[in-house]
Structure formats: structure tokens, C-alpha cells
Amino acid sequence: MADDSRSGFTRRDLVRGALVGAVAATAGAKTPAEADRGIGPGAVPITLQINGQTHRLTAEPRVVLADALRDRLGLTGTKVVCGRGACGACTVLVDGNPVCSCLLLAAEVQGRKITTIEALASDGRMKPIQEAFVAADALQCGFCTSGMVMSCKALLDRTPKPTRDEIRHAVSGNLCRCGTYPHVFDAVERAAGIRTAEGRAHPPDGTPVFQTLAASRTFTSDQRVDAGVAEALDLEEA
Ligand code: FES
Ligand code: FES
Image (cartoon, rainbow, N blue to C red; front, side):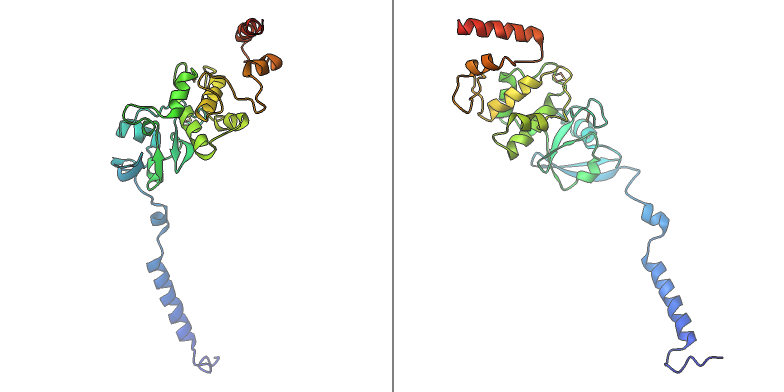
């Protein structure tokens, strides 16, 4: 039999150490079942920071933010259309970034700064981007409008003077089945002061807007509108 006592560390010590280690590891680690256990499935308390106010609710962890806003907190300005992240109608801002609230769990945005369309108007007065949407006639059925406005707000917050391409990109996740996009672009440019209240753009070189439009002859994709605008421009030039 080998002499394990020469180093002062015997086989008995080794076995004892292994056992102690195993017991300690078992005591400190969670079992697989414990590790897999998250919150729920029953209702849990959830605290949300929405439009500068703290809201407390009790909801199952599976409840998405859009439903929590609309069904639990009465903030129905946020719309749900597809419910699967395809249309952008449910767009709200989380920490200033536009997100689809139908794809986020309410429980996972606790502690984040959530902004909904309700935050934009105060004392019965609309924010400039909302007024610009009205002035530019940038809505028809209105299903996309809340989300569209929130995406545009997020853009203007980070880029006060966006280019047309930046506006297109900002609303590229917002589906408008009514085809209001040209009016939405117009609204954002009005809100940004790029376009006058009358809807006339300020060309960088100072060229009068009607002259610019007449030269390009690119108005909208609707041929009926094109014909009408072209006729109006011809009258203007005559
Ligand atoms: S309802 Fe959320 S993306 Fe369509
Ligand atoms: S205004 Fe109808 S979907 Fe955009």
C-alpha cells in the first residue's frame, strides 16, 4: 500500500475534501428545476415608468406591454393591429427608442423609461409633430398614426433636421395601408421647420418651390394626383 502520509495529505483527506466539496456545491447550486423556474406563470407585481409616472399593476409575465398599456392602464392611444411585430402600429418609445410594444413583455421593461402617444399632448395642446400631421393631412383611417407619430418623434428627438431619406428610414417599420407616406414626410419636414406652414419646401439654393417641382415633375405615385398637380403648376406658370 502506498504511503500517502509523506506529504502530510492522506487519501482519507482527499476523499473527505471531495465529499465536503460536493456537499457545498449541492447546497450552493440550484437544482435544474430551480434554475428553470422564472417568474409566474401566475400574476406578479409589475412596476412601469410611463410618461413620467409610476404605474403598478399585477399581471401574468406573459402579458405584453401593448396589452398592459391598453387593457390594464387605460392608455389606449397605443394601437394593436398585427400583434406580431409586422406593422409598427403599436410603436412606443423605450428609453427614447421606438419599439413594437406588442413584442415586449411588460415585466421585462420594468425600470425603463416608456413614452406613449399620451405624453405628447398636454393641457389640451398637441406637440408640433402632431399639429404637423394634422396640417399635412398625414392620416386617413388613423390605425397607423399613433405608431407613425412616435417613430417620427423619436427621429426628431435625435435628428432635429432630418433628410428625406432619414425620414423614410425612420418610418420604414410603420405600415400605412392608406398610403399616407408622402404626407407623413411632409409633416415631419414641417415639424422640423424644413417646410413652411403652407407646405412649401425650402430648397437649399433658394429656388422657389413651385419652380423646383415643375422642373422635376415628380410629385406622387398616384397618377390622378400627378395630373392634377401638373395642371395646377401649368396654371401657376402661365
Ligand atoms: S401591432 Fe405591434 S407591430 Fe403590429
Ligand atoms: S392612415 Fe390608415 S393605415 Fe395609415
